[in-house]
Length: 477
Image (cartoon, rainbow, N blue to C red):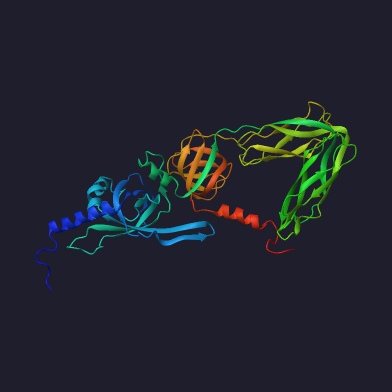
């Protein structure tokens, strides 16, 4: 049957009618998405790869969602690293609308930033507001439907959920002028949040002396199977000032034992050496069977009744900027001949401050005013400069590398994305471009910013059911 003679099968007026109808349908049944063109920053001319790019323009355009029943792709996959999202999205946009309202702006950009400006490009982003998600265009189909009236009228964009690599996300609301998109860009990728410091402060300690005190505790037997830290019980003093201590455990070839017993208070008023008991922790399973974690450790106390030694060490100021425990110093008692100088150990908190002082040996021969405890100053810390958006930052100790997301100089908080390696307290984070240098005080957060990442929740719930500290949590020993 011959073609309809009342249609010219490809005249400009007929093609205009079809395009107008399509534009109207997209405006009626589509949704407004945001198109973000990728601007190239660095490219590898040998391998023709994009090394880094940025997105600092955005254009609203109507699009029809082809996958109306939901996201396609592999969906949500459980991996050992948490939930991996493999959602795809297919949308259709008007060819005319893109060429009239987006392409003219892209054509004004430098050629080294934009490869192709006349059509949507693979690698550009689509912000899908209904799901508040960013999708990367993986393929642009420009021949579907196939040449109706001898022309194509739409672009079909086949997109995958965007995974940040070496792209620059938003710095603040001025970055793309769209707060919602900037917030979405800021949350993409592996995020490490570091607390930085420019000047550390030295901790200050106070000392109390005592008589009739426990000078030190000797470990007679280190025991075995101490998978959890036992408690240390010391018999009471007649004066009520009881000695207290903590156990330090160690593991060698999966053999868990007590390494040493350190005093937190040497007590006072003892007339005979107190007994020291190492009490293993115990857990009771749902079947009523009680398991003890560790046996065999034993210790004895060395008592001094005819002299004065260190009683307790108090933290007056915890200091700042201690990525590792500082050295502890006690003044020597006078006269020095035949007298023992006290010794101890300092513990630091996750915030890199002095949290506790443990006494190894309380010493002998101190008098009022002669017992002074000090700690070494924190590492020399000098912060300078301002980190730049997306510049590479490397850690001096850990050799970890990340790209700057945000830098808050007033709060001293540096957020890095796409980190390679793990930054550590004490690292000097050096900006490759700006030359900024600040020392990492402590790690505030280090996680995927992903509402589906539930590893920690799963682990917490599992710990309520199974005691993973046991050598064989699935059976009885």
